Image (cartoon, rainbow, N blue to C red; front, side):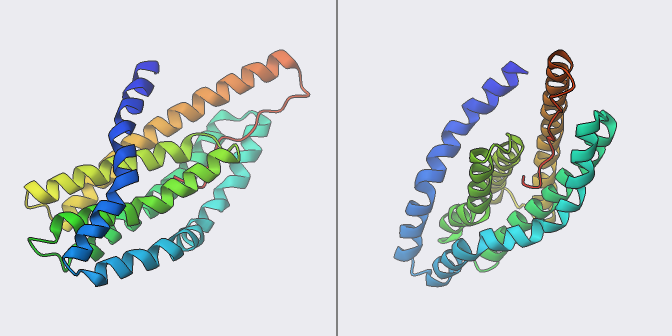
Length: 220
């Protein structure tokens, strides 16, 4: 598990540089090409996307109450089941959001605007999720959202390369993205199970006054 974490940490370095510079470079590039529609759409989505995603994620809260109850009662299978349902719903929303943004910016792309539109759409698609993940981490929500966002960013970068170098269809992009998110989901659930076992063991050693806390998350 430590080797996996080290590998994922190494992959975050190029993603961090793209997150910092991608929007600026692609925005200037699109301005030079006079792609004002793409720029305006991205700016509008930047301001409204977090609220939109929050509304889309609200149904996942249905699974939070039973997951928390199972965690407090020490029912591992129930916790995993309801936590998995919540995460699966979030992954479906994340996949639909990112692939929808990709289609939105690619449908009017030309040979000259393809690359800047791809990079610009990456920031529009993944930026709100990165913000939600950072907000959850600051509030002590755990690493589940960060893991989901990381795999979404990685999947989007792979799709960008495939769009540039292969005749990737929209359905193919969904399949690639979904595959990456499935791997992220398995890692999320593995970490959640390990965390739950550690907390349960600590609770047993500390006594009944220390109930285990929930590990499910409504964010990616």
